[in-house]
Image (tube, rainbow, N blue to C red; front, side, top):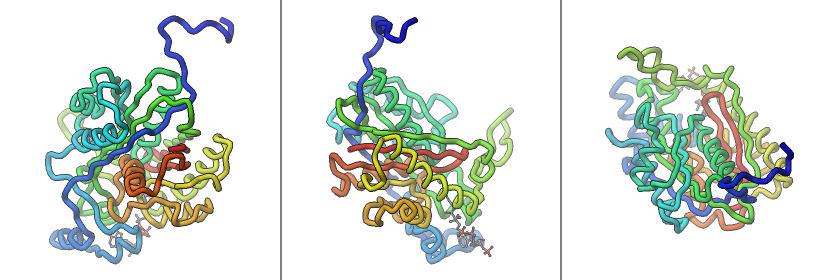
Length: 338
Ligand code: UT7
């Protein structure tokens, strides 16, 4: 078959770009400060303090979902806000991709539950699981669908209730995470748009961050709680976030000086600052919400993006670098013009 063969009838036409035309987010109402968390943990004989948490992580508080509140509920609300911001209807959506490691069920996917909640009956819907890099994976997949013409309007959501998989007696992990959801609407566009994307995984490093248990034969097998070798993850994160930033600017044919905003995964302010310093991005060009949200895994990047758009920092035409890193081990980045 020749490379110039005619496109078969019914095949969609490719478009040049996909562009983020709306963002939204949703946080559970309940805010728990470090002091409140430390007091609760003290009752169980687990010692921590506001000063330790702030000094080592930059986290001051987190939002925690009440019992019964699920990723699909948070994701649906974030999606509604993103659709409203984009000025399109759920019925216009062709695709919904949800990044989550805390789905409501084994199946159906959280994306299908959100599709039903929104009434997005035309949209294909599926979940992506790449832990804290999940949103970057989901956005890259949706961008590819839009570019090849398989979707015109795509909804990309990161939604998590990590509080469900934490061991609240393990102070080295439970103080670090929070719940929430963020969403973006991507639309086919004649101008950029998502300029470059790069995804990575190293499955040989599974053990440094995992929740390696499951339900089988009616029993819990293994350890279902999140476990992390904090220092190993820290070192890996700083190295790979630096590397992947260079990869995406190179792919886009721009330089780091062209990046207006760095929106990294929100795990630890020390990782965020170290990455920004290595990349030469000034502190005032880095979006950090880790103090308010803690680490919300796949939701952290869209939550931070939405916060900076709504407070007027990120404007139309700005070049934004989104970065994720986390369990798997996985990491990646997307460079986008807003
Ligand atoms: O989203 C996926 C990506 N995840 C990350 O990026 C997380 C990466 N890792 C980190 O952010 C950091 O490694 C942590 C915040 C998890 C830990 O900070 P650290 O500076 O690496 O501390 P450490 O693990 O070396 O612990 C120092 C001390 C230990 O006590 P000893 O052994 O020195 O006596 C810990 O037992 O701090 C102790 N510790 C705590 N103390 C009070 C650990 N957790 C706590 C706590 N409160 N919550």
